[in-house]
Image 1 (tube, one colour):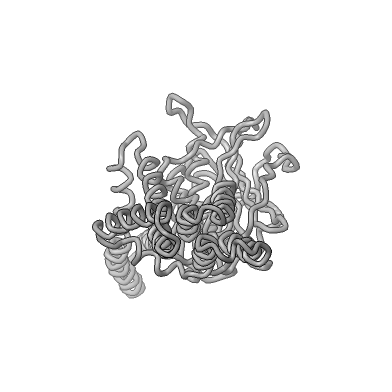
Image 2 (image 1 turned 30 degrees about the vertical axis):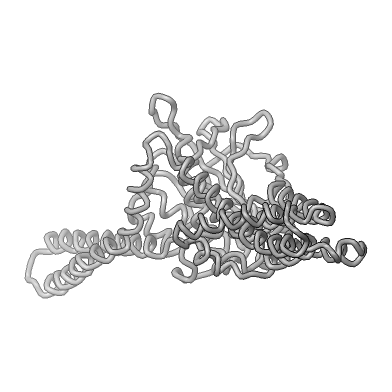
Length: 441
C-alpha cells in the first residue's frame, strides 16, 4: 500500500492530515525502489513490557557486549572468591551496574551460575565471597528499579562514606582474620554495589552531556527543551482567540443572511467568511495535533503504523513545505501498535526532520524530491526504512540530527525494545532505520 503526501501543502492540508490520516494524494511517478537490499540489523532481545516505564535515573543498557562483559566478569570474580573472598566485592560493583542498566535476566543468570558453583564445589560453600556474590547478583536481578532514584540521589557525603567503608572492608577482607574478613566481604559488597550503580549512572549522564555539546553548545539544546515544556500553555492561549474568531465568524454569517444587499456583494462576503472558517478550523486542528503529539490515546481512529506516520508527517510539514513530498508505503501500514503508537509517532518525527535536511546542498540551495517511508514487519520488530530520493531518482543521504536530540531519540527507541539508527548501505547513501518491538509476541 502507498500514500503520497504531496508538496506545497498549506495549513488546511496539514489540518486535513491531522483529521483524517487516510487522506492522500495521487502518487507521483517515481523510479521503482528495490527494498530487497534493505538493511538487516542483528536481532535484539525485545524489551519486556515492564521495562518501558522507568525513571530518568535508570538507563537502558545497550543490548550488546557491555552488559554481557559485566555479567561474565561478575561470574569469574565470584568463582575466584573460592580462593580470594575479596573478589566478591568487585563482583558486587558489576551487580550494581546491571541494576541501573535493567539487565535483570543477566543478573539472575549470573546468580544461577553462583548457585551451581555452591552446589557442585564443597569448598565454595565455606567461602563468604561466593555466598556474597550469589546474594548481590540475586538482589540485582530482583530489586525494583523504582528504588534506584532515591538511592542514587543521596547527599554527597553518603557516597564518600560508602567509598571509605568499601575500601576499609576490602583491606580487612585481604589481610584480616577469617571471621572479620567474612563480615568485611559482606559489608564491602553492599558498598561496592552502591558505588557500581552510581558509576554506571554517572557514565551514562556524562555521555549525554558530551553528546549534547554540539556546534551551538548546550544553550541551544536547553532552549529547545524548555520551549517544548512551555508550548502546552502557549497552545492553550492560542486556542482562546481562535474560539473567539470562530464564534465571531459564525455571527457574521448569521447577520449576512439577514442583510439586504446585492447578490454579488453577498457572494463575496460569504466566500470570505468561509475562508476565515476554513483557516480557523485548520489552525484549531494543528493545535490539537501538537497537543496530542507523542501521547497514546490523544487521537481518535485506528492506532496503526499508518496513523502514527501520517501524524508525524502532518507535524513536520511546516519545516519543508514547497519542494519535498513524503511517500508512505509498505505492507505493515495497517499493523496495529496500540501500546506504542505515540512512540512510533515521535520516532517518525525525528526521522522526517533528519530526512528533510538532505534536500539542501552545501550552498543551501533546495533540492526537489521525495522522502520514502517503507513499513515492514519482521519476526520481532516493526521496521521503518527511510530513504531520500531526488526528483531525478538519485539517492540522497539522510543527514543526522544534532547529537543531543539523536541520543534522546535513541533512548526512546530502546525503551520500546528497538532502535533508531542512521546506517550506510553498501555502495549507496545513508538511510535511516527505525525498529520497534512488536506487541503481539
